[in-house]
Image (tube, rainbow, N blue to C red; front, side, top):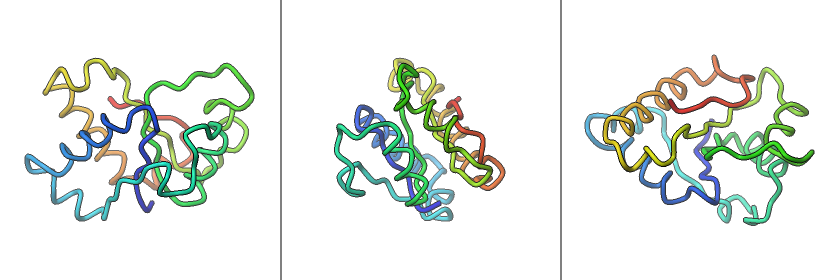
Length: 135
């Protein structure tokens, strides 16, 4: 895994999550994992990219996607991409389960950080799982 891709509609929340991941005693994990945050424009994706294109870019570039709850209403949806292309080597997509609570509850934010670090530290164990919710 080379980095974290912020979904275009949660850039602010993911940037804040990255700040939390580098503070309050978490910074050693951040540095040990060599994490970087990238945005769509950094990897050549338009904000109009389909979920399939986004998922495939994440797999090709070894990026984990952090998103809110993308829908499953078309053959181009994120869930459809995962169902169609996911293998045992595929990186998971991380979904912040309660985006409203994130930013409103410090305790919830810390649970999100802890859950994400837990997954990232064992990234090879969670490959192929498709989508994982935080927390």
